[in-house]
Length: 127
View 1 (spheres, one colour):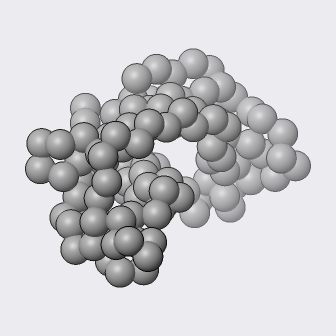
View 2: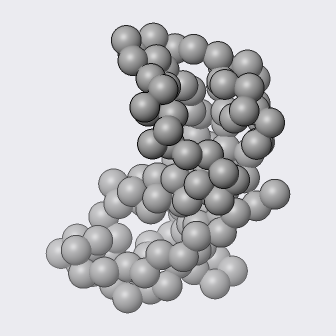
């Protein structure tokens, strides 16, 4: 299943040249991942209250083409693998049919002490 999330580029997202600043792509894909797990039924507030939170362990990113002020973009997110402790997703930021940015993101869950834990069974079932 591929999840899509719309993003409009605002002035604050750009550098002096009117091009999206590189770090803001990470914000765009973070919002898309949060929206994706929410759409699946994962309540991150309830997880946190139970002492479990998602954290990003690794991001591999490729910048392919620039996005600019007022562009309407779309972030596509899909799960590419899951183990007992890791969830790996592919994310693409697109403008129309043009891929602008691609990332492979590995997320894990940690407990309230910051220690990695197995993905909760309900999370694995949702994915």
